[in-house]
Image (tube, rainbow, N blue to C red; front, top):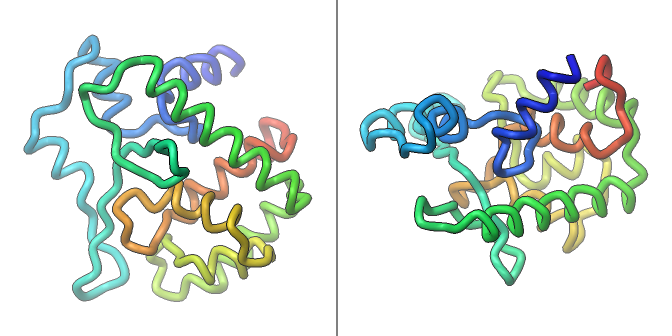
Amino acid sequence: MDQVDEMIRMVDKNGDGQVAFDEFYKMVTGGREPPAGLRESARYSSIIGDNTTYIGGLSQIDGGGSSTMLSPTQSGPDIIKARNAKRKSLDEFTKENNLKPESIKRAHRRFQVLDKKKAGVMNYIEFCEVLQVEPSVLSEEVFKLYDYAGSGLIDAKEILIALANFTGAGKDDK
């Protein structure tokens, strides 16, 4: 299991604890970018019924703390800097809000009740309600880290897994 965790860390360029499509593709093709059509079909997925679409992608924090898409021309140091900034924000957020493994489990249960349409996404207000945190600059910054398209929605599973990584949760809890 430690070897699998290490392999994920090696491939996980944005530090969210998961291997995104672009990260996986680059790993299996020796660093090549996915063809445009393949990338687009992997990124676009319909949610919340009618006309709402979420566009996912890799994220970076720029100097002002806002989320931006990673470009294929960014250098390794820029990517590492973005990943470290994301980790710092998540670590600060979990400490400031005293989040523990049990807090994340309760947040997951609250989200399941809230997510009546089974869309798997939440807006900023729901994010604060689910995690039972006060709206703040830091809460908004963490939310924006995962709002890749600027749509006002984030993937609940992704943020909860990322936060679990900063709560001292063991492998079984994660």
